[in-house]
Image 1: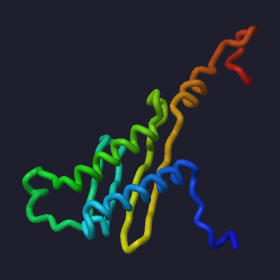
Image 2 (image 1 turned 180 degrees about the vertical axis):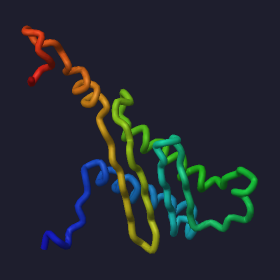
Image 3 (image 1 turned 45 degrees about the vertical axis):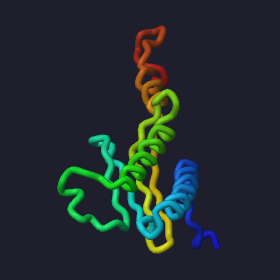
Length: 135
């Protein structure tokens, strides 16, 4: 039975819950344009790629976006802020949400930067001067 389960981290589950609610809202507002929604965050350049079920009509070629695509971006930015935490101490290493053919997909990974900083600062001299803590 457990082989058939899809497992999610708490972060992924919370992101998925928010995304499902948002898809319901967008479906009500934009109809079939919301039949496909994809949003991917690229942490290396702090950017997003979004797509949906709208025809392009040359808009993307002119460095413009439709209102619906800007709504998708705005939701993504808000989720990113929530994932980073109120004090911005959490680094988002992966964030993507997809809705297509009535199915949802999510990937969200975060890393607490305060834990990394705390571990990096453990190189404290021991009373004997022989090295760092734990030697």
